[in-house]
Amino acid sequence: MDVERDRVGVVMGHAGPYLQLRPLSGGREWDASPERVRPLTAEELFRARLAEANARSRTGLRVQRAQPPGEAGKFC
Image 1: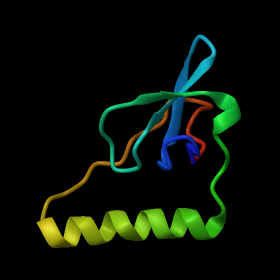
Image 2: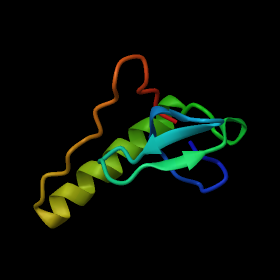
Image 3: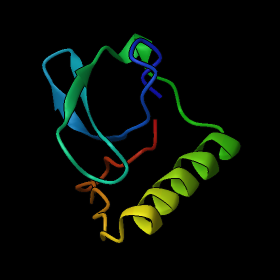
């Protein structure tokens, strides 16, 4: 959870002092300061995935999930 932007993302890597996060459903990455990022609780992860599934059902479009490389991929 990027608490500065109030956004949920998957850690994809880092660039300099910043973590690179991507939305659960894929999309453009953004940089986040590590001290402003925290792991999701189980409930928050459930809600984020449920919102993603609901969005897919409303639009009828398939949303691709971000595939984290190697050791990255923590939900934040």
